[in-house]
Amino acid sequence: MKSILKSGQYRHTENMTSEEWVRVAAPATTSNIGPGFDTFGLAIQEPYDIVEGRKIPSGMVITEVTGPDAEDIPRDPEKNSVSIAAAEVLRRSGADFGLELKIHKGIRPCSGIGSSGASAAGGAYLAYLLSGKKLSLNEIVMCAAKAEGVTSGSVHADNVAPCIMGGFTIIRSYEPFEVIRIDPPADLGLVVALPDVMVPTIEARKVLPEEVPVKDLVFHVGHAATLVYAMTKDDLPLIGRSVADAVFEPARAHLVPHLKEAEVAAMSHGALVSFLGGSGPCVMAFYDKRTHKGEIIGSAVKQVYTDAGMKCDIWVTSCGPGCKEI
Ligand code: HSE
Image (tube, rainbow, N blue to C red):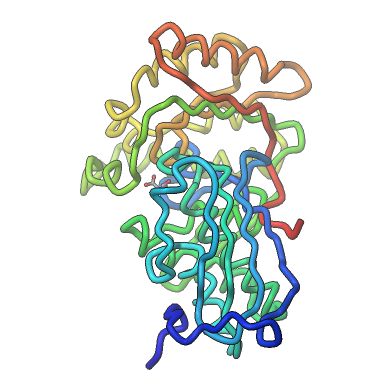
C-alpha cells in the first residue's frame, strides 16, 4: 500500500493546489502534574506552535520550518510528527488529497511542555479541519499520540490530549483508548520556567524504575483522586496539596539543575505548589490569581537560575482552550 507520507508524485501546479491556507495554533501543555504520570495533562495559553496547511493533490510536503532549533526538525514527512499525525487523520477520514505544510515552532524542543506533542496535535487538528471534521476528538488525539510515539519513542497521549481538547485531561485507558476532559478552575494561574538545558523525553524515560512499591502506588492513587476532585470543585488549596509525585520526579530530578531550589523559590513566593513539567526541564508553579502575582513567583525562579549562571525563560500564563484555528 502506498503511504500518504510519500511526496514523490506531488506536483506543484496552480490548478491542482488549493490557495486556501488554514492556520492552527497548538499550545504548550504540562503533563503528569504530580501523581498523574502519562495520564494527566493541562493545556496552557502560551507558548504555542503554529501549523499551516493547504490541500495538494496527493502526498505530504513540508515547505517551511521556522523557530528555535528549526534546523534540527526533520523535513522528511515520514519523520516529522506534524505530517505523520496529519497523514493518519487524512487516512482515517478517507480524504483524497495531500497537504503542503508550514511549521512555526514557538515551543523549544526537549522542554517538558509538550513541544513534540504540540506539533503532532497541530498537524492532526489541521488535517481534521481540512478534511471536514469527520472524526471525533478522541480519534484525533489517538492519531496525534501515534505520531508522538514515532518521534519520541513512546506512545503517550498526556500532552496531545489537552493540546487538542483544551482544559485538564485524564487518560482513563490506553487500550481501549478513552480520554476525559474537565474545565480547570478559572483562577488557577500558572508559571512556566524553562531553564536553558535540554532533556529529551526518550532519555528521561530511561531513568524511570520498572516497578513501584505498593506504598507509592497508594500515595499516587490518593493524590490523583483528590487532584481531580479539587479541579472539579475549584478547590485551589487542595490542588496544591494533591500535586505530589513519589516516583517519577524523584527519579528524574538529577536531570534538571537546581530543580529543588527553583521549586522552593516558587513556593516561598506564593505558589500553591511547584513541580517538574512533564519529563522536564520545565519547572511549573500553580498559584491563585486572586491572591498572588505570577510575575513575583516567576522572578524568584528566574533568580535561582541567574545566580547559577543559567538562562531561564518565564511565562506567566493560564490554563487554555487547546488547538484553535487562527
Ligand atoms: N508523561 C510523559 C513523561 C510526558 O513524563 O515521560 C513527556 O513530556
